[in-house]
Image (cartoon, rainbow, N blue to C red; front, side, top):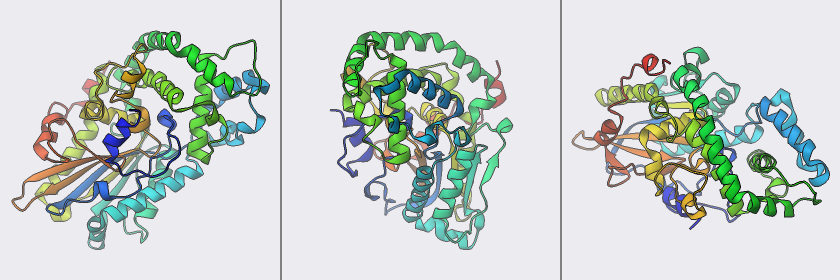
Length: 418
């Protein structure tokens, strides 16, 4: 039951036998064991691909470092000193791409080169056949450069284009949308109420389980924030260091899934489909650009440009909202609530572990058949996903156009105005 979502997305092409912890946005990238689940259909011509990617594994942000230091001090001698890596409290590295982030990004670039050889071969005649765009953050720029170097070892492509933060409406859109910023404030009370409900139902179970793994028992119970922080450090341990024997020993599949649910109560409302209406449409500028590129590719297939755009976890969540990926990936009707049963929570479509791990990516492949009919295929983290309205993985382009009809060509400044 627990692995239902993973099988539905991956098509069974997975590797490894280690226990699966649900680590929310700090999950390491689930590298597929093979490329067979996403091989290009033999009876169609691939014209273009467009990918939106999250940066690779990064170090904690500065505000998070301060929080971790405080929680670690509170825990005292209940956890081994060696568990807290120096990098995790080093503010000079705050929010920067980690060594493992570079490696994962490069390997992803290599796999993209292997998957789409016909696209890379076009670079010999046109350097703009494949392009790379990044938001203006060190971690996204570094991810894009690592990806590009590995995907294009002959350095035939143009340098990564960086979008200035004050004009970024397609990758770091939350920074240019006042309406979203206002909505984020508005939903905080609802988030707090749902998390309070969750803690009342599951808090004692989490307290008992995590406490058993600590060095010493204390008269003071662990707070929900302390447990959530240790869970977060487990995610960093695995994603940055492939370390499973420290913080992660405190959790099993059930408790990590419960803490993912606790995290997703917030993510699903601040960035996801169960918050303000702006969450459903803030990616309209990005999709307007994607559809414009698709139309250009269909008019001139021989000169079509494929795009790899590097953003953030929220970029992928906003994209997911507009496409309705929660409906494609899960069974439970929205919204995510603090009183969901454990079984209900496993079937929800909005699960950050599956949707936005580090290096997560969503690709749109554009095809034409022998009669010039256009088709698309959607890939999430290199696994084929079938959107509602599609009868198979390869789907008529009209289905995508219909889904995006109300958002393509949007007046971004107007919809983001407070």
